[in-house]
Image (cartoon, rainbow, N blue to C red):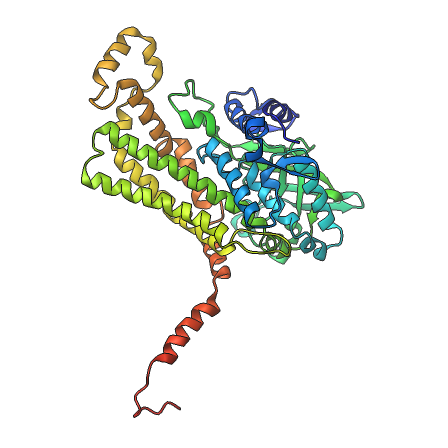
Length: 490
């Protein structure tokens, strides 16, 4: 089935526990901190379900229709079609919703392409995964994940002389019906809007912490589960025009807290396997399917940044200056580069695992590294082009309600190239991308969403064809002629 936006909103009203500071939020669809973000997600579902765009966002299998990010691709054409759907989803949110439904959905799809990896660890876990995959795609569920232990709180040496529980989420009990988990996990991006949460590990776990390796999935209204949200950026926004991105596109981030949460065995996919708790995503297409989506989303976001940079220069009347054109040309080249990297992943696709198709893994990891390395400087280019103009804009668009203030504003804030109101709209938009809390959060997100730079570069190291590189060097060395007077045997 393809869920509608209204159905998605109704599923958010399921009694989930969400805290914003001391306040418990009872309905995220109506609370000022979350209602606009909830509506943004609902709009995605409406667009997916609309008859006019059904073939763009969904596919048919065995007489049923599913969202395209659940497709286990068989060939190049499938990969292209799936990527087109990912881009269309990212286009709807301008690349600003990182953990849209197609991200973790792609990860679970990748696992479902090679479930034997889980069965080899414990018989039945692969079948659990396949049943779960069928459940989530048939019900068009929005999945989020929490896959990182809390930082800076595990080491006993940090708390000498104190009795302190390890807060890392872990199994604390188990019986014939399932396991019991307690602790905290980071960082559940999008969880307040999702339907279920995938709990796992995207960084290696030492075997001595194998109780933390638990990999499972739960509805977000499960007893004992709560979400502790960071400051929602939309909470204090009265007018969309003042903070247009914060108002609509704050996907939120939360710490997941589990207090003796019971997980039935049928929802457990890995247990007591420290090293494998991360490897399952690498030995299957899971990591590649999820992060191909990340590359596509970044490509769309680049289009927003480049277009905004050009519009700002036009508004400033500096768009014809050669040095400015050089900067805009560089930004346009960077946007084309990530576009080429995305398409390269499709053209160099891999027939892996057997019977399926996967975007080129090496090119995907290289793209992750490229995005991580370049995002800060790209945003800084936009900030430089903006100069101090955003700080010259009135605090709020509500000054237009005063006719005298409006007349002064329209007279003094206009330029020869743009009227006062559209100028203010443009700079408010740009400021929300470079200067607000929303912008600062995006700087962190783009730097760490795939793991820190060490993790990302280690993945590139793993995928690199070092034998081929070495063979190239050796072949060249062998072709170099050695003078006869040198004894080559030494």
